[in-house]
Length: 104
Image 1 (tube, rainbow, N blue to C red):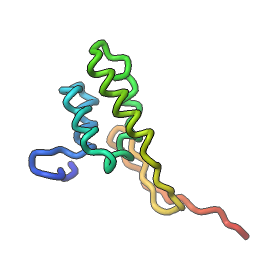
Image 2 (image 1 turned 60 degrees about the vertical axis):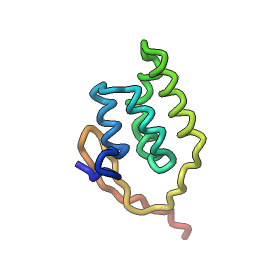
Image 3 (image 1 turned 45 degrees about the vertical axis):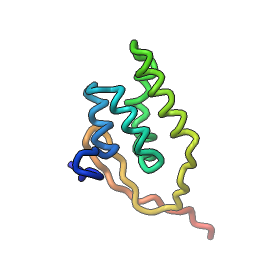
């Protein structure tokens, strides 16, 4: 488990895990919004979790998911110019190196 930002405030990873199991979806979406812009990268990586919430039977959950996704899309994406990367899927982390193209 990753450490949390404060003793009672879970980080984005923990909140996204709660969404995966369907725990308090509205509260979790609001908590994720409060973590922006710092958690934008993790939220972008979890579109597969957030996307289905747009079609939720609960209109509040669908609206909050839409608001969160709109906010994340408005934030600038950081430029990455090569280096160490990590791909994560269902608890499996794979490290790899992205290289810059050779200009020569």
